Image (tube, rainbow, N blue to C red; front, side, top):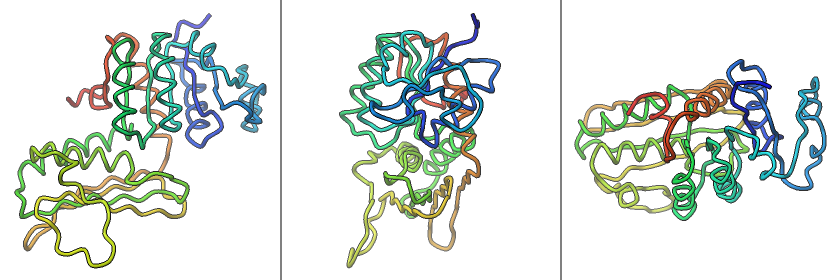
Length: 270
């Protein structure tokens, strides 16, 4: 029996799910113990490697999260808010580290995630790359240094299949800028402009979303002041950076006390 942590991947057939499966399978620091899909999916009952069109991996795709989580030390989850909330409760019961890359969650969803984190480790981030988490810290620092005469705009671009906007990463960056200024993001957030909107309100943090093609992920934080602009930028060219970050979070969580952590904790940036 392997002495490395056993990991379950939820949403196995998805774009990120398949990348996570391959990343865990290739790692010598963890091993794959389960691949989860929704009931009725045509991958159920198949070897996950063969379902992806490759060699067998020795793991059969299941629709039973309770059984899979019971034998896992970590669950990596890039699915949808309703599914993630359910998985959080089940992972907490199994005392498995729950790594959450799901975006688009509501305040009510996050309250339920917090409840699960009282019993197990939860690592949640809108983006799991090292570069983005460094960008978050820079956005906070620049926002704290520049006054309201500098308008802040978070501009993000993703592939045409992304279903939520602004992206989770954009919201992370907006929150960092708000924290830097000591303001409530909800009170200053400007997410929609159409028609005669009037002048921009001083102190607002704006969000602009672009969707098209196969863009992996691009994020700019623009500080536009009188006579000058400061632009912080991150461009992702390979989704493997997110899978590697998620695996790193799953390994990091193995010896931690229950709690709701971020990638900044994992990377030692806080």
